[in-house]
Image (tube, rainbow, N blue to C red; front, side, top):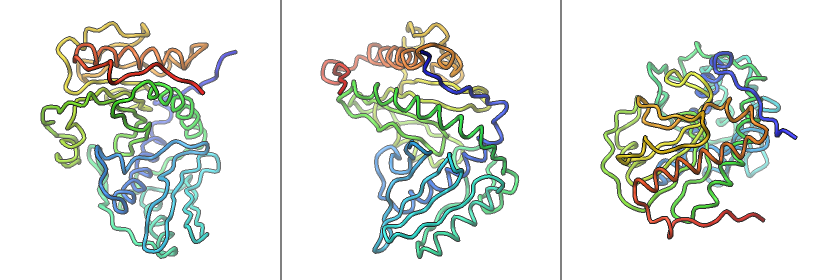
Amino acid sequence: MKAEWPELSYTDAKDTYETLHLFTQIIGKIKLDKLPWINHSWHVTLLVTTSGLTVTDLPDKNKNFRIDFDFIQHKLIIKTSDGDIRQIDLPGISVAGFYANVLNALNQLDIEVKINTTPNEIEHPIPFNKDNLHGTYIPKHVENLHNALLKMNNTFTEFRSGFIGKCSPVHFFCGSFDLAVTRFSGREAPKHPGGVPHLPDRVAVEAYSHELSSAGFWPGSDPVPFAAFYSYAYPEPEDYRYANILPAEAYYDSNMHEFILPYEAVQKESDPSHILLDFLQSTYDAAAESGKWDRKSLERKLVFG
């Protein structure tokens, strides 16, 4: 039986994705305000859940609180360790309206936050509190994206289990709006040049301080205008781009300096997870072999149960 992965159309869902991207950045900046810095900005990421995305628990004064995107009810839900709950409807609201409602809800819960209102990693950003341009939220597009994230999150987690070196969680970056997992060789890397739009260079330098192989998923963007999986190495080894990668639909993008696999090539298969694992493993193999990683010390066979 085919394990059904939903169809995703960047063309149809682009406006919804842009709005949701900005919603997640607002919540990510709340994490940034409340948590100590963790290497590679891992403290500001979100996690995929059965109902959407979560920031998990955050500290505030004498209590903790949690913020969840519920893509089944299409609400943002804020809960405190005192038992208080606030809910915000996601459809039919602009980014400015969402920002105001989130701050109002936190104020009612006696939670104080201070965030920079300028979005990160976005060309021509509009401050959250002034953005009435982005407000498209079509529930079906969000539901399809969430269901796809659930499927690939399981596959990424299976892939992650085969590595015993330093490895990130499988997590969702609100800055670049992607699900990702990153493996590290243990060696330091050349200083990253920075230059990411509206992101301090010091953040990029710290994120790429050590040699890595990273893979993930975007729902689409202007440079890659379709849902796609990606994989790259930093620093990129000399022969990396010429490696034999699976499946056949995968290719090296010279502009992005990444291997790209269209989501559709995975979604249409009878066993999508197997095809995605082929891509994840073969691109990692390319990075580890051409980069001369100490694979014997860093890897193990996949263990189930």
